[in-house]
Amino acid sequence: MVLTYITIIIFSIGVARKIIQWLTGESGKKRREKITLRQKLKILGWILKNIFIEFLTFKRIFQKDVKTWITAIVFHVSLILIFIGHLRLFGLLSILNSFLAGIPLEIISMILGLLFTFSLLGFILRRIFLKNIRFLSIWIDYVVLSILFIKAVLGTSLRIFSYFFEINRKIEITLIPSLITIHAESISNVDLLYLHIFFAELFIMFIPFSNLLHIILSPISFFLYYLKDPRFNWWKNE
Image (cartoon, rainbow, N blue to C red):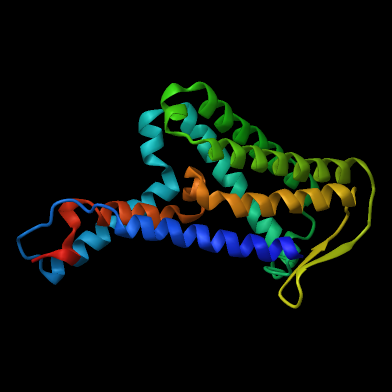
């Protein structure tokens, strides 16, 4: 439970530090001409449209490398579905239970876990062996990816064991009293579950200090990327 508080504090400080760096960085040469409100709204709409298209299609990745694009699609789709599944463990989205009745969630969860784990392994190997990616990486990127990979392996192992062994054990783990409680069912190995949670908190704790922060703040980073472009630096017009 103490680790959860430490995780929240370190994560919040790291994210705040990164956002301050983004906002106080060099913004380029100021535009001198006036931009009307209509033009500002048009620029804003263009930025939001590009963010939406990027999230749906990963267009920039596809233009560079189709293999990486496929890996990215598998990684992000499985990540989103796994994240939604985890919300049910915290008592959220329980309304989905009626819609999911009769669906073999154990098999689907196991497949998603395997897809996520292998796509993540592909990204790790890509970062290690591709010189241009390795050049942009810092040591903590590898630490964070390794923590995430261990977490993924542990989580997938829990699902695999739960599928092959008939286990009906239920457990509740309180991370923050009256706020965050995990309601887990069909747990095959409690020790693996605690390790899974431990590495999840380590991942959250360290990610703001790595280049992988875009996993969480990609909408903000993408938006600020365009706002800091000299062509659209309209909030500093003279």
